[in-house]
Image (cartoon, rainbow, N blue to C red; front, side, top):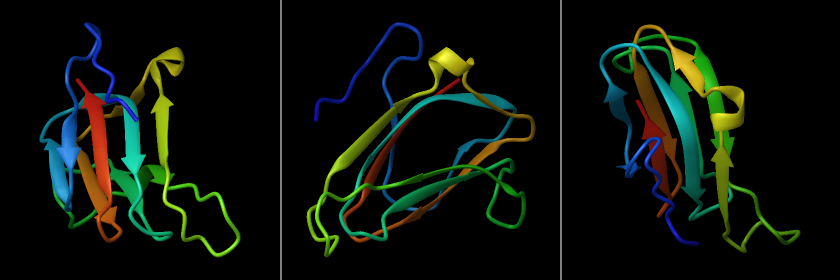
Length: 106
């Protein structure tokens, strides 16, 4: 799947491990998850580190067969919703072998 880039929110931040995406208030505009396993996910917290903050938004990789072995990707455009706001910071918990996330934020 091609990685979209738009003037609205530019190029994505690539996520391959737990990471603080932004250490101040911000918004997520779009998310893509290329799942490596059926356990691939991105969980976004309203926090600047992994110590706290309730999950605000989660993305789980979809699979196309009964035994969850066929990896696939999902792209979610949040711009029609005005993005998802985080008033403290944006922290991402990443899971999944060989999973890659792309996060467009401001």
